[in-house]
Length: 64
Image (tube, rainbow, N blue to C red; front, side):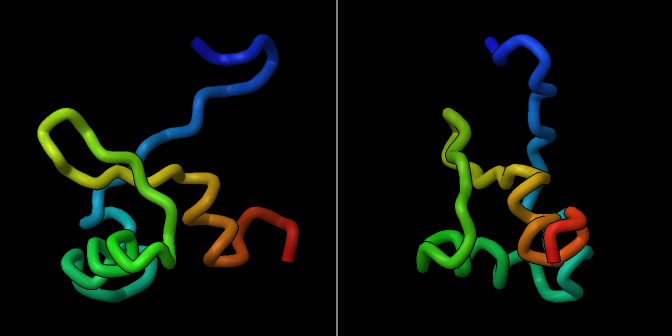
């Protein structure tokens, strides 16, 4: 459940994040394992990344 008035953050796959950063998907997974980017693990053990955090790292969220 999400808080009222707060939209749910979209979850991105390593491949989607990799395209944004122009790196390989395995690089994104290594970043997550090293703690350089936050991730969520699915029940199957796959990494997912919050879109808002990825965009903030890219500087596309309007804060930088």
